Length: 177
Image 1 (spheres, helix red, strand yellow):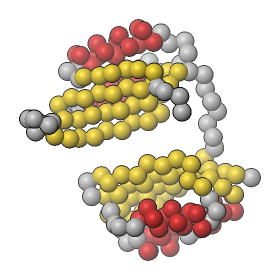
Image 2 (cartoon, rainbow, N blue to C red):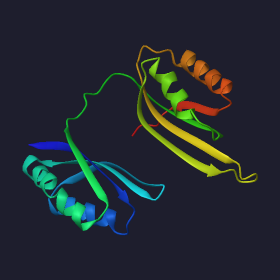
Image 3 (tube, rainbow, N blue to C red):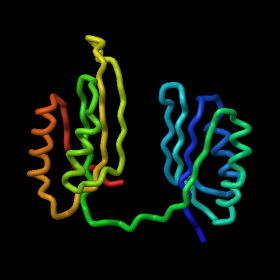
């Protein structure tokens, strides 16, 4: 029977991390179904959804200390999970750009939380504006909006919320897939 495991690792960025970890998973005949990997301030963060035979997943978790020894300053954690039942709703994507300042993520998260809208994915990025060099901040969200929600009213309220916070935003249906 196939099971799923969320595997995360955090540590100093080192050449070959992704190669060696993915090779270890492949050698155990396991599959990486979904992943997020990023260098954050010199630390490498990895999140993987791994699936496969329960015995092989157990072998993976049993061998994590070996990987921690191989890659010094890398700490793993894991949790078994199950597929989430498909909920009725509509997928939307939201993009926000603004001059960087504290609280942007919180204000966006609270807006959707107060409306019982789930954030399925959130990615942020800081960058320098092309001509001025000002520190900019972008946020990309994927949302799961309940069917009964009025998209027109939600979009209007969200755009107004962003205008009040001096955030440039877009709110559109996500493409399938």
